[in-house]
Length: 182
Image (cartoon, rainbow, N blue to C red):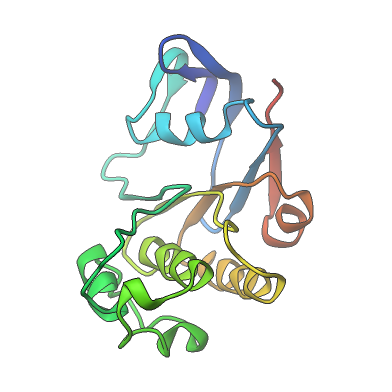
């Protein structure tokens, strides 16, 4: 739960925002560019400063965070399976469409394939709360639909808080949407 949370880096960027998250929810954060959506997510994992307000986390809360631009070096000589293993995404097998990428090298996947695998790296683990920053980056409409299916299926296992600038995606994927003002 957050009460009047204001976050930023050198100075406040987002907030104040108050919200609660319940198990099983997929909650979206929407706002124009520069409104502090990504900054708010980063403040939840200690990557941005909380200037005011209060953040309450349950004892023992296990978080997973997927950055807006997951790191993929030019040459990544390990497979999708190894990538998921290193990420601790071993709770269950990934969705069918992602399985064909497990034996391929990460550096051979398209941007959209790598993006979906990175999202699964966060969702396929044991986190109670998964934070996804712009998970639709590099996704075509078919892959975006798959992501919506994955989020709906995964919501029964955990809570997801995600950032997107795509209102239609948020309407389709989320149980509710919080709007940040610039």
